[in-house]
Image 1 (cartoon, rainbow, N blue to C red):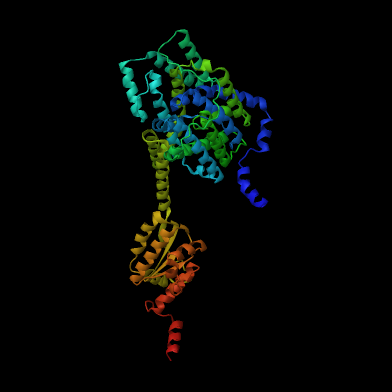
Image 2: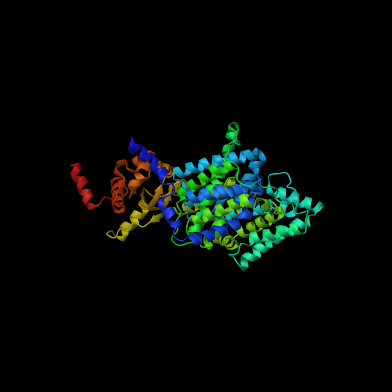
Length: 572
């Protein structure tokens, strides 16, 4: 019984924090504390902005950054990852808020947390590495466009128009601004964005986002700019944990949105962890633990009024660049934001919405890696097509559909490329011990084909057409030792080709069938045809000898003297 319990507990235990995680926190705490403070300064305006953009308010963004940031740092699979509300997640949450309200968003976060924990227990983290780079780049570019368009109403100082499609909402906001311009909001948003973008080029390590927001807030307060609408009152502290938002009767309709949130959280978190590994030496994240950590974070954040969270690439990059070495940095980031929630809520509530819009506009612009996009576009036409389709789908549909479309198109193009590698070539018989006359005679009646590459559903029908059109021969030898893979479709097509050739009186022989191919061929009955009357051979020379013997016996080739004597002796 104990052994059974130990086997059941072992997968869970491997996902929990280990002593080594805490040991690394003691090695250089000063650098981690400084990095955590820097990340908190950068994360504060982003948390506020993404909370407002999600529709649940700035307090939801702060609660997410504190609760999810701490738990993901503690339970996650990366020493350097920083989690919280993100622009990509906000894009998914906006239509959920519109359809199900704030309570629906919190319930979706809870369900998504359960799904992420289940993915971690199923060891699904390793499969995320198969997402092609053009899908990731197109996805990121599409998210940047959506985030930018989402901020247009606040940047223009107009109320958010009705609608779910960001293009439509942004266009209506522009029309409203043209009727009643709010140049104060435009100036604040443009000023904050300009300071962030120019400052990042001048001094990348300086947190210009918080400096710009402080300056914009001071200007709005000093000059009593009534057009600069503030965030509004924030609670001084986190709310008590509660499940009051959970409506069991509505859970069925929330499963699909929860799947979208869980998929996005898994994708963005594992991509962020991979980026963090690439920026350092000696760091390697555990993908399953990262899924588990994000699951725990998303289970807890809704209890405190937070929105679904994921790892944040921008904040993680800041964490790495400022010298973080352990989870202590991300935990410090969450602790500093908690202090802000409890101590500085009245000051934070005065920040103009336009200033936060400027932060997110600059963030969206900085998300676009022009060099990476140019490289993908120049790589191959297939890569460029996948990138564009994913970006357009992200902008026009939603993020999960965009990733699915990108993966399907990338997979189809990859299958086409692999299928093109399958070749069937007529080969020389390479019989060094035969005369030129015998070579000519064999060429008239025997043809050998070497099949190279994969014989599967994407290439099999082209193979059938080529093989079925063989003419003016009596024996076909299939050299199969170079087939790299074969599925049931390939085996069925091979069987059909053999049957068609047999009906035309052409004998099919084979050589070099691998052990791994025999089961597939046997399952569809093709192995019986290939082995009919001993027509399967281990090597090509043996198959050639068998073909010659068959043609001698059928009278197509004249019998050699030894064979003629044997027949004459047998007739007596």
